[in-house]
Length: 112
Image 1 (cartoon, one colour):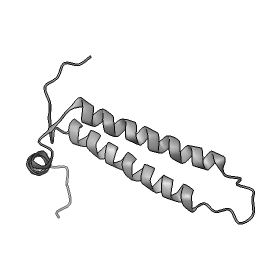
Image 2: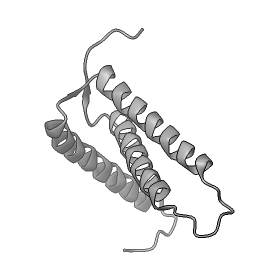
Image 3: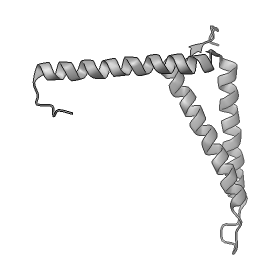
Image 4: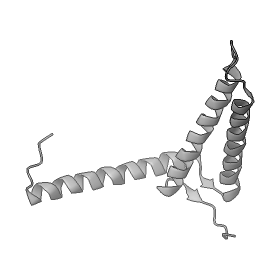
């Protein structure tokens, strides 16, 4: 890729290129994700949020119940709970980004 020299015309070319790439990515994501998740509603979003909160609480409860100073401490259960919580948390963040970027349609509902 050529180095940017500060030329206004070159800047316009680069800016237009980035805009076109962003539009293409948005269209591809909207088509692909939108076909897999045709419509998202408040209930499904909140259901995932509650599940993540429960997993977080379960993980933290397991952390607090361990005697961290004991010899031969078995943390496998805590690790499992952390892995599940972290995966669910990342999934929730991905869903938030998907909504923010307009990749899925939101079911028409009144906001309460």
